[in-house]
Image (cartoon, rainbow, N blue to C red; front, side, top):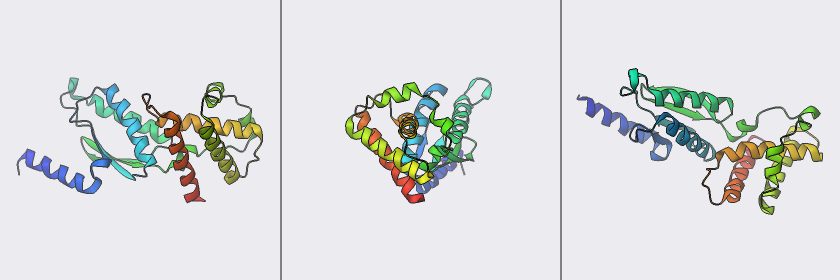
Amino acid sequence: MASHDRTALVRAFDEARFGSARILDLRSRLPTAAEAVRRVEPWLRERQIARAGEVLIVTGRGRGSPGGVGVVREAVHQLLTRLKRQGVVGRIVEHTPGSCVVELAPMSALYDRPVGSRSRASAETPTDLAMLGDLDEATHAELRLLAEYSLTQLGVPHSAAFVRHEMARYFSVLVRSIATDETDRDGRLRLLIAASRAAFEDNA
């Protein structure tokens, strides 16, 4: 079988397994490493919210890169490693030498860290706390409900300090999934808050 025929066959199998909505093909667009990272992170966060499960990222082998080192492939791998620590990515498996399957973590993994000590409530996050004041009333109320729901699930008292800092913590995580050119930031944030609530309720 000719090389291009094998490539077409692999693509057909990938399309059947993942569907177009769960495949990100960087190879066809030839981005720089920085452009690839800027594109991959929000796409993965969007897929996590949509509960996509497994997705396929095609970087190419990087044969045309200087020294034959796939700079886009390496940059994406480093990003995936970071997103795994942040609770976005659950598992990374090489699919082909130029692509990988990424198993996305559940939304609840974004927030899996202890909140039960009072020392945590005293750690100020002034930037996030200040930005909370810029939210519209409806979004602020939804974020507060999410924070209170989280504290209830964890058995932590709903003191003003805990609620305020829990709101800031959620905001700091969720805002990373909002594109810088998003025209309806509050509407997008409410969607993310709803997805977070659903994730907690699924695990309740």
